[in-house]
Length: 268
Image 1: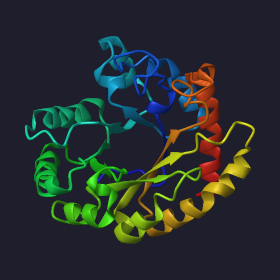
Image 2: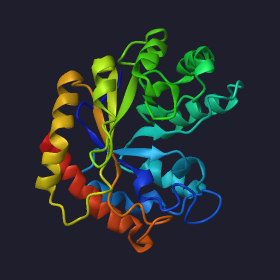
Image 3: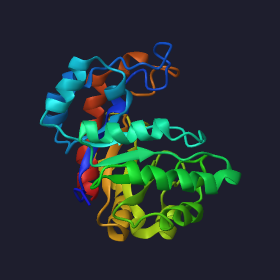
């Protein structure tokens, strides 16, 4: 199963001002990721966790530039519905995983506790469509049934082993602990980590931030050495819809993300 142990990716959602549809109506991407690939590479990231709209909602020439780049798309971050009984969109998502050459797909199951059996059946069919060698990474997000790690474990264990089907947890030291309980239940099924440090301004040094991240980084790495990581939220990205919208631009946020990358590497 394809995995690059300890790799750290940039989540392209971080450099997308319209990630939540607050910069312009419609939720379409404003950032052309290909324009920032040299800076992403120079910063030292091992690849991209590509927001699906940065592939599926862009002109052909932008997609061609992404696919021709030496910066690899490691994970495709998808928001396919799991409440929809029809598999068509999930099947299309699986095709996009192959098209962009990703080694994994991030997905979220639904929120209805009465539909866990349905979600499990849909996940089983989705797993059969996802290309061989790609990891299925379920974001154990609050508000979804997978927020309960025991539910997540039951779903996963009925379908595939940890090398194929794993969990994503969040390290968000500026908020609540979202990783220790899932790690305790899921162990090495935790195969990917979203690091969210948007509350730490650029004045915070990489050394300081590294110490903040170290407890989670060491615990997760010890329990799941195969885990990979994404810098998902970096300082500046809360601009649209909150404050300091002028900071919510790729150049500024990449400065923050490079600091975050250095801090995380030191913590690991």
